Image (cartoon, rainbow, N blue to C red):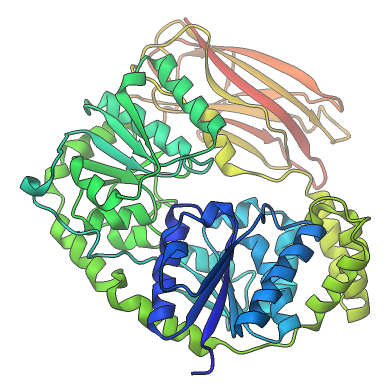
Length: 583
């Protein structure tokens, strides 16, 4: 076999889904006769794949964020030293900041490299200029770029050449995560177990699960996983404000999830946790990344959920009533059928060895003179490039710009730079779920309660939609106090105002109402708009305040802010939106 040793570059892969996937891959490499060497930071030192006694060598160093010139030079030096010392045949990385370093090291050492892309969040969060660099200078020269879901693979096709891109599902150790008889479990409770890292992308769904579980009569919820102290503190504050602090137990990170699951009646989580619970024949509720609940895994919805790696991103959120109905029907879920589906296609027992064999078959070195020249220019401009390279105008214009000018792609690059400059606001979807996170233990309206708040500026031409949770009921006499801070870049404000449209629905059947007894807004003849108000934006930031009185028992379902008959370039900047409800 030509490729007998691999260097895996690890960054921020703490205990969790990425770590578990890497554990399976490391064992797969070793089973195929490939020596594994690891270069990682402090966060990976306790991961099982790092502690694997069959791994040949491990170096733990202070990597932090490897996106400055100084850090790239330092880590690259360490990687090349390990490659030379151990006769490494190829490089593998799982973190976006390590992709670039892998590509540079591969070119300088004349060996192939491969990467795995984790999560749609990567495509949403990372600097757009980093995408440009990866698309043009890294992905085309990788032997293999792998993804773990069809949805992620579909998005990645816009960045990665089809010849390099492959889908390899997450797999689960079906022997470790296996059914267990009740009499074999030392401690059994009818509470629920949430298995999840308390990260920005997941905490919104966990908060909603706690609220729904409490209102559905679940005895208690335990959470296995760690997270940032600020997020955890906010979560605990929400619990305290709702008066249910004792309802939730924080277990911290655990390494015995396979046995811990059997102590609880239901498991909740997302992605790999769904497979692990299903393999253990435990009912599993899927948490949404957007702050909602997607429902329980069944044999019928298994295939649809697999499309998004069992996160339900393309499925609607459950209302409280729908959630309670699913809870009441848990006993009808065919847990054995779910485990059989996992055994057929997601068991790592034999598949990882087969996958790794395919990895190796794709390996071949590709000459990448662009990345070598880029690195040389980065070193030349190290001092002027301050901070993260992807945000540095020196890096953009004097490194990448000159490189593409000499390479003949100057016009393409100029066009892309102009698009980046026009894109002033980057959207972080999960932040909206965090800001909107609340815990309601009843449907009662608290006077002055903020039912929606957003203070992140957004520059748009078409508009924004504010979706409100179904518990926001406004009985007779209740008022909504809406405050919008916004401005426009349009020249003629009176002819092209912003339209605030408010939709209502019947709380009994969820259907939209064509006519609702409301004061403070005008009734539109357009059923899709409902009630509306024209907002004459100014060329400077202005506060607009509206009082909307609801005179029946309808629910507020949606508030839309749209530019009336928008023209190209007539963008509006919405700085903040706040909605309060009053008796």
